[in-house]
Length: 224
Image (cartoon, rainbow, N blue to C red; front, side):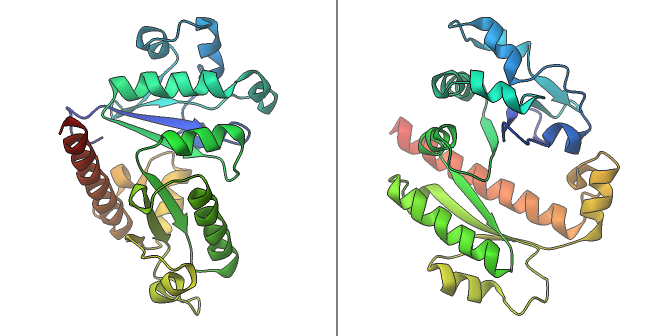
């Protein structure tokens, strides 16, 4: 999103408890619920009207303000929204709910790349193993997922190699812990922009570069 020519849209699909609006300090004047006004005619011209902007860096599609609204958001409706965004943005980044609902299953199956984030504690690792098993059952190839170890420098009695041994797959990226993450979030700014030279920011930029390289390779394959 730091490259002016790169079009990025962040979508909050934790439809019940999404917190992107809170994290980015964005007033939820428009959300995915407003897209229902387009009926069956979902197009980019209509979606632009419900997208918000974060510091002129990327667009955001927020989750509904009321959890009860999700009952009116069908799988087909959300799928058509994402397909439209995908045709008009270089990257569509989706923050998903921590559960395999019908919507989440559809989203995961249609995603080019799935990032699975875990930490150095056994409950998180157990959940990661369950998530990997679920993705395998859905037919999502290993090449379409990357495992991210968050707060990788914590002294928790486990390390990266332990996690890899427990889940049977390699960790592709590590993100360290840092107090600046919480303080930046509480100030309403992403650490990437508040502290670009922080180790966490550098790790996230490295992850973004890796994802960009994967996207370039996918594009090359599709063109070929």
